[in-house]
Image (tube, rainbow, N blue to C red; front, side):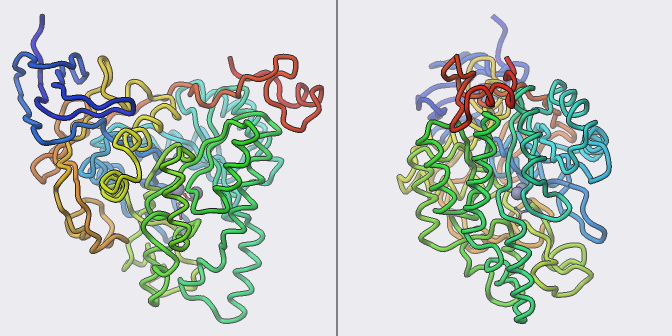
Length: 496
Ligand code: URP
Ligand code: ZN
Ligand code: ZN
């Protein structure tokens, strides 16, 4: 019997399914033993009094994404993944974004160049499809899915990204046929445009009005429409960054009708509110879409976490510096809300915030926490069981937590390249003290310590969860309100 490279000893190990007192033996970057009193490893880590959890999988973050002229994301693959590691996250999935008029393949190749050998945690890519030409639909997308890019985001808003319903339907049909998962940003673009014009005419251009221009109703409408499109094509979708009650009601309604449908939320919808958009231009720090809502909506999002409505919790880290002409002050000016780049940082704080306010308060169990932040994202995007769990054969991606560590969040202790955190001054209990990626320490004793370029690219499998729900065989699956014959014609066979 070969020895272990590392043994993590005496910790309380939790997965999505169970919690157990166990030692973990690691060899060649993988978990090879789970048990009591394992033989000594070359490296010994004493986790007595600590929690030993699968490293987090942050399946929605934006790093070094090409931006409009004059804007720049503050984090690239080096600083973004460093920050992730220091917050207990061991896999990230950012976005290779197609530029309208250009090829999707080019976007993926360009994104590999940007990733270079910079990452310190492992990473996969989602794609963002902004121009679903015949070439993209028939050739590029199916080929890219087969190569391990098995998820893509569709925007229902943002002028340079949004697709109309027919384009979305065609993309969902490709997802169904080729076994990919579509992620939908659900907000009604025309309503936002009209509300923005109306607010501007009245002179309301401060960041506070970003929230007014994107009320819950426009997210509710788009969520319902996305669900309808998914029903017509009979393919599961993920509604990303769900912000509150009315969107949640649509998801519950669809699930109640038997649809297979997934939902993501983010810490900003649990910890921030519309008030954070106020206070003058400082509010720009919290401009993201959908916008943070109110405390009543926060409560409904918490309920959705505890009762299983939500499949995953991601950061939606979209890093722009506040005091920066390429960030929240484009051209060095305080601009009208429509010109403020959308997004907030959160890769490093995602897990501690959710652990502290979710697990420690009893709103969610420790196993739910693991499931929402690691196991489910890995399953949803075809990375499980390599990622997202602690099991024999899985990568030794592990976060060792001090569940009693009291931390006041301050931007100066974080490791991103953003000049603020929206969570400044918040007190949390529980923080990862050591993070391992494939058995190597990337965060330990308060220091990032990854060997440079340690992160590897992960081609994703075709996710089981993206398969249409098996249904009445004669009808070819779940057909909702579509007449059977039309359903068969429109949908085609799903990916086997
Ligand atoms: O405001 C946000 N969420 N910015 C990031 C891009 C997106 O829509 O996820
Ligand atoms: Zn989005
Ligand atoms: Zn996003």
